[in-house]
Length: 83
Image 1 (cartoon, rainbow, N blue to C red):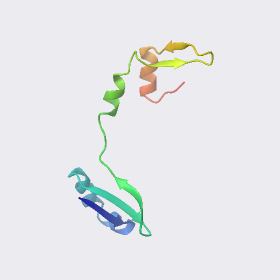
Image 2: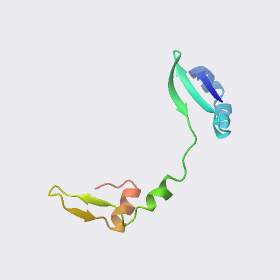
Image 3: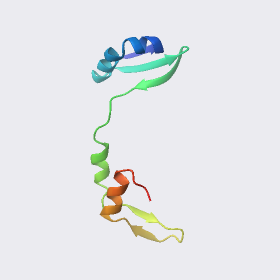
Image 4: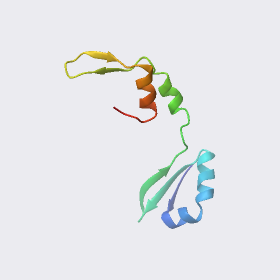
């Protein structure tokens, strides 16, 4: 099931809307009658899936050579510490 609510209604009923999303409903918040935000459940498995990439990530340098990433470099990347 899908529902649309305006901003004021979303503020007043946020707990109910969150519960509706947890129950599988699609909730869209509208501003001036136009959809602007979809409430969606959090995907908790994303980091676990990224960890499967350890040892598999390569970088192509400007000369076109591939350089394997070390586990330490991948760990930093997973933590958001980009080079």
